[in-house]
Image (cartoon, rainbow, N blue to C red):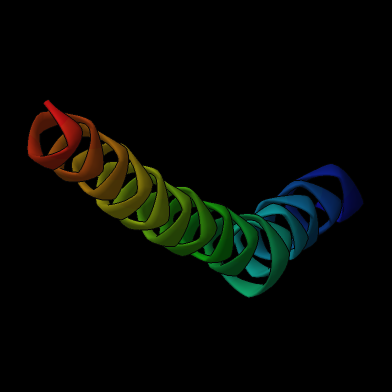
Length: 55
């Protein structure tokens, strides 16, 4: 009986860790990468536009 109870508690703790720490960290990382990609796109677009205007 205690084995079942400890197994259920282990599963609940694992779900708490996944939904409490891992998923928010992944979404935060994804948001950071998305912002970084947008900034990189703007920089490349500006450099390309300036280079074409100089010709």
